Length: 313
Length: 302
Image (cartoon, each protein chain N blue to C red):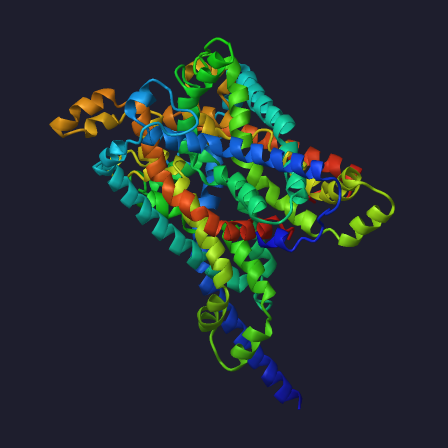
């Protein structure tokens, strides 16, 4: 009896191993791809501590690699770029957070108040349009709108103001950046909020109505609180992303005249690292910023965890 | 949109005035949102004289479609259009395939080391080597200035794998187990049972992937110096941003030369924007529901 049992067990084991080999074979292309394109670059970070020469291996033990330790990071922190880039990045993100964060929340509450029908559908679909327009087209439109003979200046003149050179004067850049980003994202960001509103138990509204709550009371005391968990979550993401500006957009809109206000981490990395060929320096700067970014996200999460139960981890 | 269509939490009573105000606000927001695109459209089809004088603001003044006729003759644009189609088709197909291949084994409880493999796949979502090490790697692999630089790195997306895995987990596991007991291999279970059932989620992956590749420019800017390989967005960048392409040079016909004197660069650029964005503008109202589905699934906490 025992023997038979062992036999079955053994067969099962064999079968299990065969099954696993097949499953791993199915995954193999994906696992190899992830290793090559995502893990090897992680290991490539070591060049941030070297004077890397293009073409040489990332690590060699024949003494051909010149290790410089933290020299690149120290050089960066001491340069004028550190405060400028960090300042610009944080300023642009904060401004976007202050002016943009509440827009989709308000808009989704507004949408919820409209009766279901053709009009609501049009408003919703229309608000998604900017999300699907490519960054290059958006940047091209922004540049032509704000140029000296563009429509924005035409409007300013029409209202009695004076023409402004938005593409040369850096002080306008943060507002342009903020407005463009809000325009591009506010509609799309309502999706998450709307799904939470749709999940509210209708009895809550009924109960509030019986208790004498009017329309605005119900928006404020029923709809808005139901959004708090997602507001918390997105707020953590926003704070954690303070160092992630939309550099793909900035890269297209800015020009050397605007660097003072427009140069951010992503654009600096591209300019010095890729376009300028300072591979080691760029890598070190990128790594340093990633570490600061991670600290930010971690702190934001810790604060949220203390305040409520909606922390990410 | 279906999910709000079912929403019964409407506040139906209340004064008409409040309703009217809310509708007006929503209408104004809609107009502001759509105006930039609308402005580009009416500028591109108006009479060149009116456009040059900047007299077009609310509606097209005098219809002139010559700009589109010129642009339709732009060989470089068509080449970049073709390139974009090629990239979109390759990457989308590969994304669907790798998402399925990566997701299926992870849903199988008998997979030894499932926890570790899942971690191995998830870690790069939080940490990555960054721009420059990736760039150097691509150079070493010989992908610089090669069409494959757009296709190969984009072939696998962790996010799509997670999306498909979540979907597979929602399918009853008895489906797989009974087929397995009947002697079917995992490979045939995956492609004969799971993939046909996964069509809804594969539609989401395909559309995300296609729109993403259609709209991206950064990879091409970094890896493709050869203009013949450029996707549409890079061509647009040269036209709209770097302004290294002069659309007026498209005028070949002597008889049209006099028009080109009046035709402003801005009108040609706007026509180019409309011409290259039309495929998205016309189709997104139909595929937005897949996008919304993806956004909802992606926001679920694992």
